Length: 443
Image 1 (cartoon, rainbow, N blue to C red):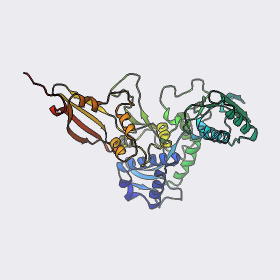
Image 2 (cartoon, rainbow, N blue to C red; image 1 turned 180 degrees about the horizontal axis):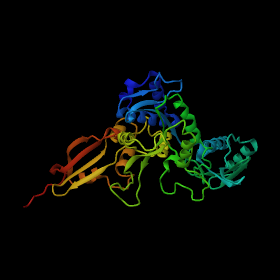
Image 3 (cartoon, rainbow, N blue to C red; image 1 turned 90 degrees about the vertical axis):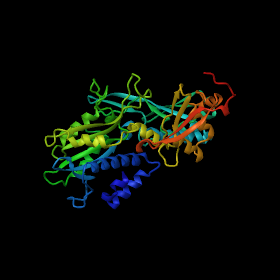
Image 4 (cartoon, one colour; image 1 turned 135 degrees about the vertical axis):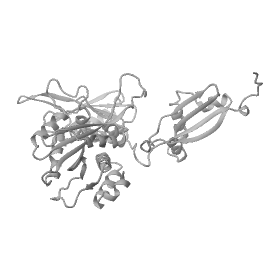
């Protein structure tokens, strides 16, 4: 995508995309950059496109200008991406967890890595409006009294099985010491789901309001579109799915928020389009028992009187985009674990085994990247063997076939699509008299 866009990328835009894409630690830079790159590439695949045009009426330039999304009409497109950061309370809970973990480490080195945090919730009505809040206030500071309580709990010797209940101004958290190390961001929990209680007082509405300013200088007759990508946003991901609306009306959905925005600012914007990676999982076993198929982009259109119907170019754009490997929240979690780092372990394809009893021939196809990671020293031989035997639960097929008197009779590489980031090594095994006891073959 970068190579194909290079001729139309301005120097500044290209450097900005590369900086964000190569950000190894900041998921809030890397994933939005991936979506911006993909959507720009998709728009460019429809036909000629201009990125951040210098001739735009002011310094707030849209991401793309094209005449091919809506036939014979110029469209100015601004791209945004959003996640659950502000609504989930994750940042606030993580900040408090880090302070408690640091206090535990001061009492007994390393113990903070084993702590798990359950933040409690409060709810009710204020001035007739429903509210629900996590008891993890922004900017909360652990004081000396609380640090002393943490140290006493850690040093008591009961912390391995017991729990510590901490309360402060706006804070209510139960700390549990696990028997195994915890992963940051996976060591915090609240029973409160990600939800919004107002159509205009939430991060999604504010993002849309901020982004529409990029389109302010559009000349008359130019369509002004906001493309919003889901990089871990429940409000966007849940749209159209079962249970996406609150029957009690206490919370608002992503569709409620965007619909309200479009109606409020119909003089400033002509449409909002949501792109959300979707992996459909059925309760019934199908072609893929792991539930990884089918993968697609859910495209939801919110129009105005100027553009009431979704243009056919949007369908073409959605079909051009490579199928997503993960939903937004999954990609976000895996990124934080280093799964996409170039120096990390690869993303492996599955393994298949086929048997031809008549010809006494067996075939195994396993990930080429798995072998490369072994040869490069990124995984151990033990890890390699565990992968091939599903953690030791399955038979070592190579040993089994060799004991049967079968040896390698052929090998090949089976290339997969470019978007798989992996190929299959295919090994063929057949009967070999040199690997078994001799016998007489009778007709």
